[in-house]
Every structure is written in C-alpha cells, then in structure tokens.
Image 1: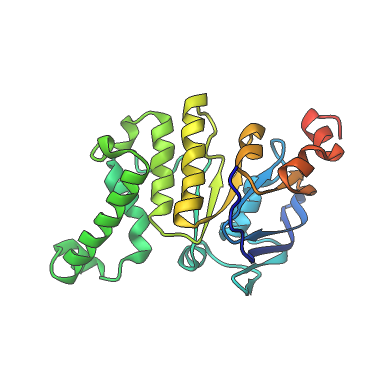
Image 2: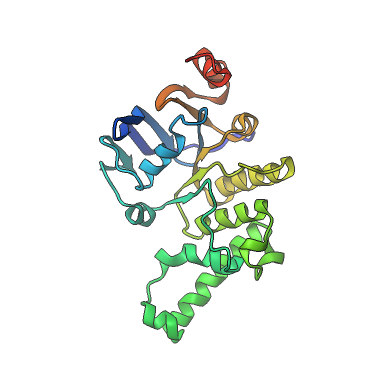
Length: 261
C-alpha cells in the first residue's frame, strides 16, 4: 500500500462510555484519528463498533467522555451539527430513497450546501436555478468518479446491492466531508464488489483527501487498506495500532477465535 501523507489529529475520542439502561455498550473508549488516514474499527459482533460511530456522528449521547473535532471539544452534538462541521456517514443497512433515481439520491447529500429557501427551490428561478445547476454538476462528477454513469436515471431500488452501496457512498461524498464514517461498506458483497469498493475507498482518501473511519468485518480488507486499527470487544478497547501490530496481539487473536470469554 502506498504511503499516505498523514497529518495531525483531526478527531480525538476520549473516555467514551455509553449505556442503555443497565447494559454497557461502550466502556471508557479512547482513540484518535489523524488527518488523511484510513482508521479502521474492528471487533466481533456486538463489540460496540456501530455504537461508537453513532457517538461520533451525534446519533447517541455518551454518558461519559467527550469528542474533539478540529480542536473543538463536545460532550454532545446532534447529527445536523456534526454534518455541518464536515462529518458524513454511510450506514450498515442502506438508508437510500429506493423509489428515487441515482442522481436524486446523491443530490439529497447536497442539502446542507443549499443556500436558497424551499420556495425558491420549488419554483427553480434565478439564484435557486443557478444553485441547483451547480449542485447537479458536482453530483455528476461524483457519478463519474464512482463509475455509475449508466445508472444515473435508474431508481435505486432496481440496482444490484453492490451498486446501491456505491450510491450510498456517493450521497455521503456529496456533503464534501472532511471525515467520512463508513459502517461496513463491504457487508454482503461478493469478492468482485469488495475489490471495487476497496478501490473507491482508497481513491476517496487519495483524490479527495478525505479522512476515513471504517468499520469492516473482512480482516483481509482491513489489513490491506488501513493505516491504523482500533479493536473493540464487548464494548472495551483491546487493541490499537498498525494492522501488523493488531494482527499479532494475543488478546485480539483470542477475541476473534472466541477464546477470551
């Protein structure tokens, strides 16, 4: 893997604990993410990976700890604030508008960038029309980048699963995020689809300069494309470091082989 120009810490997660009633989802989790890196979060099912992403992008409010993004520290942010600051998210279960075509799904990711009001957008006149044309031009670039030109006008629900995942990535990219949170972007894919998605994740990181936080079950993928890996098990951090160091960590090995509990 080509060496990336990794920068300073852009996102710092400190002592995050999250409970649902009496159930501890996360216990005292700390790790950081450096600008321009691909940072993986791995762990067995139920380890707390998606809960961690939900804390970062404001879906859940942790009971303890705080998150620092670009030098500003928050104990709680809502999802809109997080998005406005430049953090985008894809979801494990696709949250696309299945009846809408590819262009309109990706355009929905431009919502926060639109300055004209709903009335101006509805009549598509003057500034609203110019703004929409600019946004559509940006969306067309994403469609070209993700190689889905042939499906621009296709309702998303008719596309194969692997292409739907690509549209979901495109909608997140339409927000022009500084940090992109990917929740199992390769889940349910065949080998060829996984290879394609790996290439796109690397290209997003390289060409857009986007920092990526990635949850992924496929250890081969994680080892191939990640700069650093944090490992969760039963809501606790059991490993953190380079892919090579994590792969050799006895606690990580036992968690994945099911021998730690």
